[in-house]
Amino acid sequence: MVMHVRCPDRLPEDAYRQVLEEMAELSPIVQALPPTAALMELKGALRYHGADARRLGEVLRVRALSRLGVDLRIGVGPSITVAATASGQIDVPGGVRAIAPDQVTAWLGPLPVDALHGIGPRQATALHDYGIHTIGLLAALPTETVQRLLGGRGGRTAADRARGIDPRPVIPRALPAAATVRCTFPRHVLDGADVRSALLDLVVRLGHLLRRRGQAACGLTLTLKFVGGATWEKTRRLPEPSAHDDDLRALAYRLMDAAGLQRGRLTGLALKGEDLVDAGQVAQQITLDDTREARLVAEAAIDRLRGKFGPRVIGPATVFRRAS
Image (tube, one colour):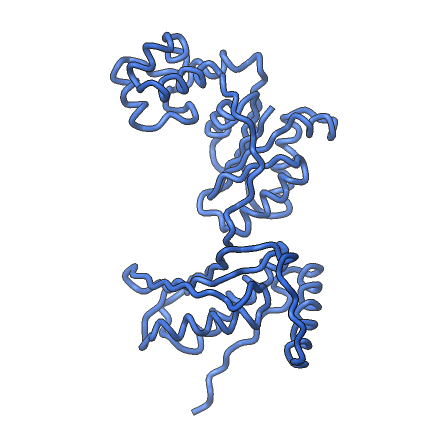
């Protein structure tokens, strides 16, 4: 059995990663389908937890709601196609729909043909033109006929999936090696202390996110969003991979300086850690800088406080304006 999970649209990446972590607590075989979907293999998990597939889906949904405040649409079925089609038939905000192997044909049959996972708009239009409006009608056609309508490979795949045939396995796959934090200003902001404070907040959030995941960034990308929809983006590499606030802040400030803003009216910022690597693979340099060592000790202590009391228990320092 396979579980297909749909998160809310435009879910922030950090929340999406947390959903994947919740899934990994139920099964070791989780395949990320960014930006907002994922698959989970249930074969071993059902035996381990001693629960049926629907029950595991309900457990995941309750955990995501209670721990993350994120509602999920969860489909369960004997194949990826059936599970993904089931999750797509759940209304927002969320729910669980489980299709047993002996229910597949009866359940798929009456559904519109464009509800079948993997059928695109052009394929659906081609099938409609020939009077094929339900998955049951598609399944009843000879494979050769569907191939003439949709093309060789695409037609065979569509015919098989309409009959519930989908041998694809769930392949463990993590998210792409990047992490992004964003902020949006409630009103247009001119470059200055307010923007620097927002950038510092993004640096602290990104650093904490990377350290919590055990990752380090090889570079940073800063994106500025302006009034009218224009954007500016620049990427630079770090001297060595890091997840420490000091290193990220220095590079983020250089990126901001490179923008050369002169009273630019900003609506938002985004800071992305690029080419993430396992922090355990990063060489620890011996330093004689007592100030840096003290900051790293303080950073670790603050991380422990955030882990215990929440990420906002200690925020970044504010950039104050000088009195004129």
